[in-house]
Image (cartoon, rainbow, N blue to C red; front, side):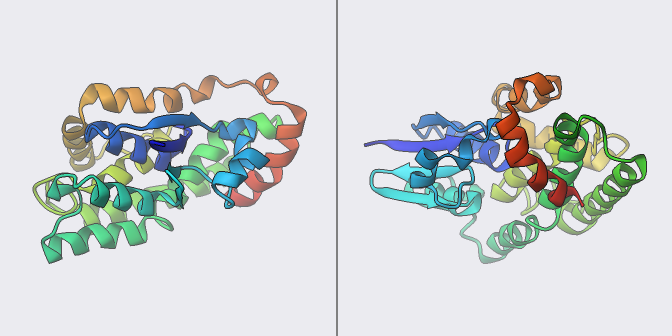
Length: 242
């Protein structure tokens, strides 16, 4: 049994895992789990990951959930180049620092804007109130400011001169609101330059391939969703953006 990855590339942590494996030439079988269709809630996927979240990894009889744990497992197992998770103690600490913060920082703020602007209207049949959308956008802008001033500063990448897992996780998180029309790079030259460096380090074609589905997700229509899926996901979406 080879390596299997359960992914949906609309999901930012799934894209991080996908980009890392592709960039490092790690062979795997892609197992699609469509979130918007509620496939992660099914019994079959629950046998792989009882948490019913993607990404998930299956390596023979070994299964693993949580994107950061998966990325570290892959980096260690396949002995990927040191810059991804540096052996230098202080550089490694910079990576750990961002990865520890991003769950409640870039992940939360970016996801809320994406869901509120791209998906919630499909499930409700109408957008959220303008004042709520403005609140979520303002929160995201504050988070981006923290990212730029605290985590990036004047360095080419978060941990120094080379791309790391921190940059990989950060770029997919910050691309999420871009897909909903909130471009966090516009008007921020330092951020835009960092994005260009990250894309170049990953490979522009690979980066575009990984984000193609996300950037097309705005064309999803309500009639593509079954009533059962709408009912299952509506309440959780609303709770997340409150």
